[in-house]
Image (cartoon, rainbow, N blue to C red; front, top):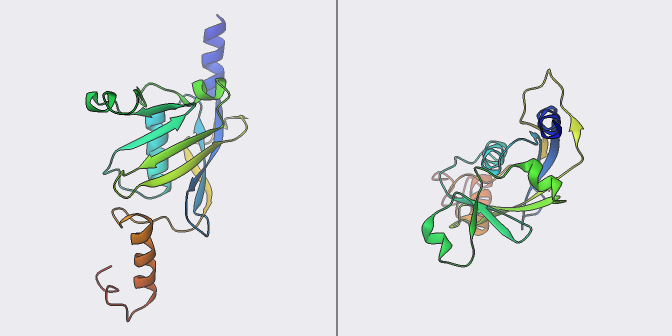
Amino acid sequence: MQSARLAAELRRSHRPITIQLDDWQPVIWRRAEVPLTATLNALHDVIQAAMTFDDYHLFEFRADGKRYAIPDPEWHSLRDRTYSAKTMRLGTLVDRGITQLAYTYDFGDDWRHTITIEAIADADPAVAYPHTIDGAGRAPPEDVGGIPGFELFLDAIADPKHEQHREL
């Protein structure tokens, strides 16, 4: 009975989260509301939509000393064990006291983000979750070449005389 009540509470509750791109100034960030029942794989989808990436590359979350991603037997033999992002729920991490996650997308471009989990709130039945509610800064385009490539991209598109302006 108690687990049924907890499951019903989780369905009604959501967490505002802040997604911030690391190593960039001015800060590029988004704020979204995500149900506590969402898996980390679903949170990955939210981040992809909020930052306008195209989901072409691998990703991982790190929290509490653990790596969460789509398990691949080759990764197990490397540095550390991979736990499934398809089964780990945001609510489970919140129950463990976790309020911040590290998220990396595209290990070539190495887009690192800090995900901050904010206070619990009751879900509004009139709102479809998850959804983005706020943000600032234009996120980098897919496959731009990481931080150095993003800097070049911004310089080139801002200057019509830049040799790569037309190409980019």
